[in-house]
Length: 261
Ligand code: PGA
Image 1 (spheres, protein in one colour):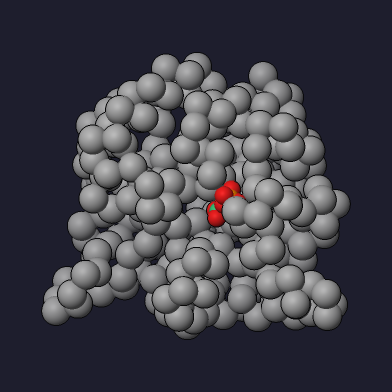
Image 2 (cartoon, rainbow, N blue to C red):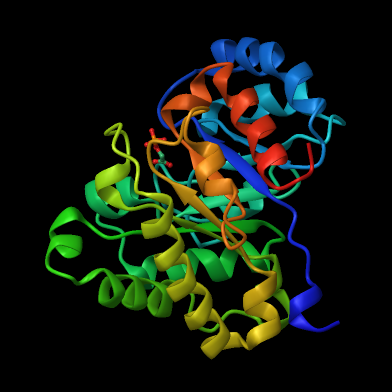
């Protein structure tokens, strides 16, 4: 099939970050499940904290709603206090968020580490959602393209070519995360085009067309349609607004903007 005919299924993921322990996660997932299952045209992913994964798994099992972890280590097992192995997520989660800017910024994760984790995700049957994004200083200094290029080349090196199409990339400008100041849709589309061009260079045009690229950063029900209306943006990685029933509305408006509503 030629690249022009690849139709990507939109994907909206809720990154709950450090919110909702097992009992609250169970209750919130239960509260939003009905709304989410009514929008099957969009892939819906809930990413609770690690201790709440099994609670949410029990709620969403068999519903079509997917489960994702927020992080993991790359080793399959061993003496790595506090870490979670891909083998532990295998069979429980479908997705794992890797290289989120909070991991990079607060916990010192480098492109090299994110790359090892990404390779491990593929090796253990998990689909990585790899995050990239520039700081405000970078954008102001016209360094966005350089920073994104470095992150994509570094984090997404040496992927198994036959698996690249499964990859999800989240473009999340750091200055837009949790600030209420989303990027403009045009800014996001410009960077997503850079990401796809790099993927094409690394893995070929067909793979680059198949990869789903999300926008993330202060996404709400009020602004999602602007992003989702762009053909190159395949959904969103949602933080704050994914902690509320508003998340259902974000998924619904994604479906509508993609002509799937
Ligand atoms: P936000 O977070 O939607 O709260 O800005 C997005 C993210 O960090 O993934």
